[in-house]
Amino acid sequence: MDIPRLSVQTTKGLLGLSTTKPVQRISQQPATLSIEQPKGIQTFRTTKPQVNIDSTQARADVDLKSSMKRWEEVASYSRQTVSEGTARRASEGAEMMRIENGGNALASIAHRSGRQMKDLGIKFIPSYGSVKVSFTPGNVDIQTEQQKPIISAQINKPTHDYTPGKVTAEMIQYPSIDISW
Image (cartoon, rainbow, N blue to C red; front, top):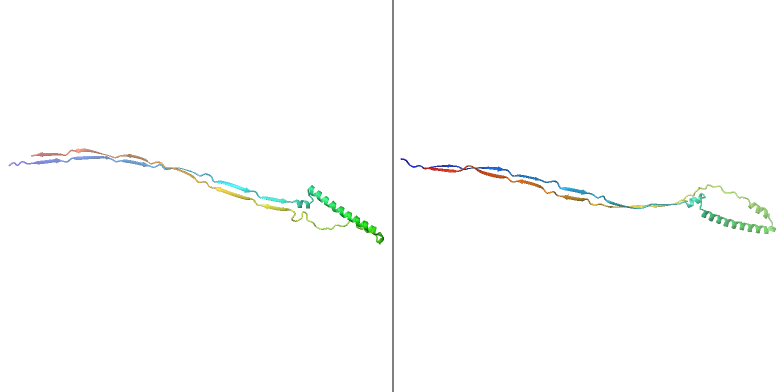
């Protein structure tokens, strides 16, 4: 007996996939920097030192006097000498008027008119302390003003290249069913 028979044959479908990987490139340029340092500002204020030397007395001690000083001394000496001479002459005249009182007035007057001996002594020229020195110190005032640095930074944007990936599908084998009986 022949029984009908059912026969089913299937063929699987085959799907083929091909992929291209995505490519991504990122690069970052370094930042652009500019740094500038201005010079500091300095100001100096000075007061000059001052030295005063007064050598008038020392110059007078070594007989280097100004003409004005010399005239003053000569005038003073002359007045004093005239006064002393006048007083001596008056005294001698009075002594001679009283000649009747005895004594030898003319011999006494002649004896006094002789030159007198000068004293010998050591004299330092110029005298100690005859030069007057005074000193006013100077002063230096320094002012400094610092300058801050000038910093300029510019950020560079990153470079981004992206190629997307791809998936391609293709049927390598189509599915099929074959039924026979």
